[in-house]
Image (cartoon, rainbow over all chains, first blue to last red; front, side, top):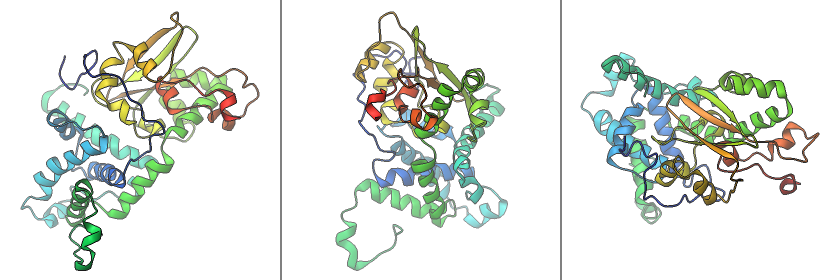
Length: 132
Length: 208
């Protein structure tokens, strides 16, 4: 295992450079992208495997930057830009918009987990493999 | 303002937006118009991570463990259950690893960026960096030196590699000269980095 997804023990990346007093978000757009990522996970429109695909293709320093790539490429182009009318998706009950109860403090974190768990279930069902 | 709001008198203002800001606005507008996201819901999510879920949650857990040995034992035995008992929901399997004079624990995710979000909030940029992920398991003392931390050579360093299901929280050693301190006061000594294992708790003199 020596791919980009398993970096343990690899050489050549230099020293760790911690940022003193790092803010939660460096710029406002980072928070918007993280929130979109969570909301898309809640709607069932995104799962973590889409993100991992992005990781193989592009790497950026900040997580929200990765999320942006995930959303733009995986969700927006693949689905939001599709010719399939929103109304038909809405009426089918999936995907849905994140509801208020998703947004209580711990619900927000559950949204993240839901995206991860959904990905694992899909993987297990399709390949019979175990955990991520 | 959505990306397709077009105010002819506002060109100067809009030209100051960076490419990334424009892209994010455009994305949010599309997702909103398609009915995937609600902008007010996004505000709630942002506020949650800015104020409600962060290292202060983990600091409370650590401070309680320092003051309550029964809780400390329960925490080490089943981190998920013990943290949940404080009213914090934990979505992943949380394993708490306690530092001792003989052993220092450090957490990494060599695969990606798995992190105990429920108790520490968003991971810092360095946690996801190639430098940290690659070196933490191979040269932990060197990584600690990058953080200005030096441990006695007799102290074993154990590095825990996170997974999608299992997240780790380091329980640092209680600093000396804190006898009789309340949990609230103890929590002021607990830094995010000391709960990842790349730092040590503050000294009492630093918060006095």
